[in-house]
Image 1 (cartoon, rainbow, N blue to C red):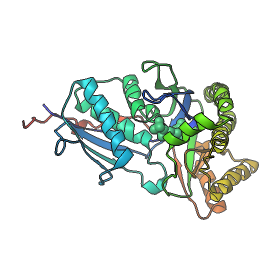
Image 2 (cartoon, rainbow, N blue to C red; image 1 turned 90 degrees about the horizontal axis):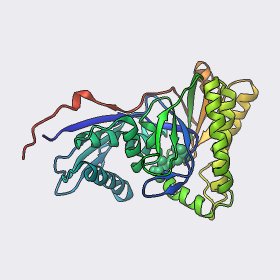
Image 3 (cartoon, helix red, strand yellow; image 1 turned 120 degrees about the horizontal axis):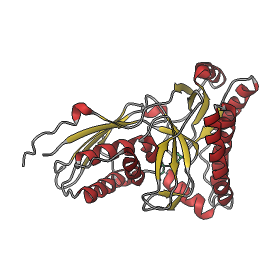
Image 4 (cartoon, rainbow, N blue to C red; image 1 turned 45 degrees about the vertical axis):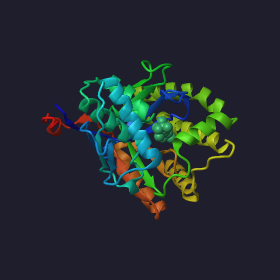
Length: 334
Ligand code: DP6
């Protein structure tokens, strides 16, 4: 029996960031992190260990064949699944993202979470969510968290077994407003940028040691329904991460002039009494943590202040799902 399995996963945005690997092979992070899984940011991936094509894995992402590192990361991940499941056949993998690339949310988080779920099931494994989270981690750190919906904590751990994510209690009605400023490909990959920050930035140890306190405050704020406290700590943690990477040698500056303009716009909204706190990942775009009830108003005000930007609202989304319709078995032809 050779099954084609389809799974889908949403992207997530970290409120307390993952930035740095304690173990680059196992993808163990230097800090625990906290994120919000977003709605309508699905990546859908179908995997079958059907022999692939010409004795190699046949991979397509949004209809095109990836090359270089993008392909290597997928093949390496499939090798790990094959090794665990005792499967030797090459695979066919087709992945599509429902989020237009221009939305700035198509990330490795959703991609590797969906791939982990589809590939493990297609290889005959039946993993629980925690095990899936550990497996997704090997593909990309942020994918560890996309297995789950809503607010999610990734425990850094100190070995493969102890480094996984789980959903956490959230008494705050949260939403994210995404400010898309540029869809140019990032100049430095996050993997390389975090390595350089860890190896050369004199500010990095300070960010790491403060991160635990940030996480504790964020978790307490989420439990208490305290959005301003959650927002302040999230914005501070993200700015601290960027300060650490700007101080790397050579410095990594993902910000564009429009990024700084967006940060000021978010502050101006706050001064007007609206709930809005910024976070930035490994790129120039800005995501704004706000309340579900005021998200549309925050988005409208940001559109006024930032006429060149594309602004959209995302609400908390669901974790990984295996598509039952496609998970049916079909006979192996050979
Ligand atoms: C800034 O998960 O893309 O988005 O583990 O090397 O694949 P790799 O890195 P990746 O890094 C994400 C970094 C971040 C912060 C975060 O999502 O926590």
